Image 1: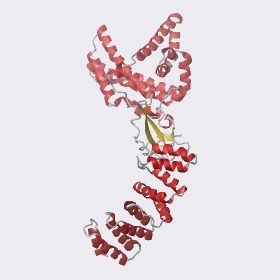
Image 2 (image 1 turned 60 degrees about the vertical axis):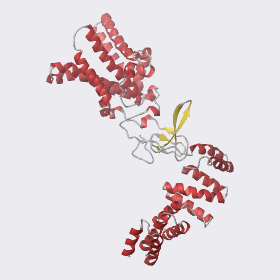
Image 3 (image 1 turned 90 degrees about the vertical axis):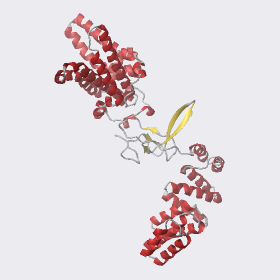
Image 4 (image 1 turned 180 degrees about the vertical axis):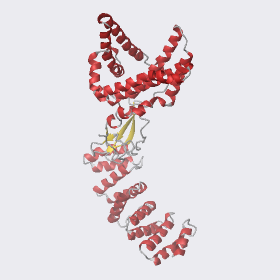
Length: 477
């Protein structure tokens, strides 16, 4: 059963937090980069617990190959492989002469297709479901792997000839047909082990076939269809085309279906990589058909938090406070996690004056992030501790608005009044008078107080941008 993100139920989960049991998609997880010996590595953390998360595994991210066949058949339709196959097909059309040289050139064309198909298989098996780029490196690097495949077919052919010569044609065919059933296993072993001798060892290729199970037979059925497609095309479709175009069309179809066949084998490796014993890393997985969501930005205070957490767990709260205080001299707190941790530490140690000072900064962060409930709770706590506690004007304006939304209209009016008294020249003061008038008129049904607030607004801030709205409101009253 597939696992889905807790916050986005339609998205497959990529990560699991063992502490809070949260399932996270790439957008919900926190990614941090670290540089080790010049190489950058990305680590993923739970945004709630600030602890490393575990990859849920590839099985949760990919569909079984039998459910993905339309996308598997569409694999070569990307721009680069499509152009490559077309160019090879056109070249084959012009290399349709007789003689050794023409045969060698046609063989070279087919060798390039096989090499690209093999690279597609390797890329898919490694988790990259995008076709590899068509480049000199792709077509020439590790070319020996293609010859290992030729050697497998050559060995089967020699075996057929030898058995037929010794025991008769019927026995030769009877032995060769079952052997052909294991050819995909042999090719898969060439990819996963790199060893030709393991690929032709029955202990390995028979064992691999049984580890994949019934799905291997289904894969073989699709491979048979793909292998037969060019012949079917030649028998039925080519008769409707000019004879001159037959080599080109046949070469295109053969190349196209070969790439699909190798991609399918690669996908089977990917799907059954754990059974096969083939390693696939999360960083290597790429599926262009899936939705792309970027990880959350790393907590800006992650370095400080990583040093503070062990002190808190050890009960060294004062030491944790002093560490935060010493570090924020160079780098002010920018994230809510550290700000909240610092505020709570000061509260627990009853360092009231410092707590109230941090409360102002913490409220700025909470209101800027829209964390309404936490912001109201912190404000109430600080006001209970000290009735003269005063946040910044922007935080107070947002808090007053949230109070009004929750039905605490009198508290909202009190907070707007506190803003205009404490910050009489602030740009939010005119808007605060207007909000007071709205609350008195619409919520408290007190037109006199509403009119009084509007009169003060018109008198004190005649140049404010909100004056036209205030005048219109007053006229309607």
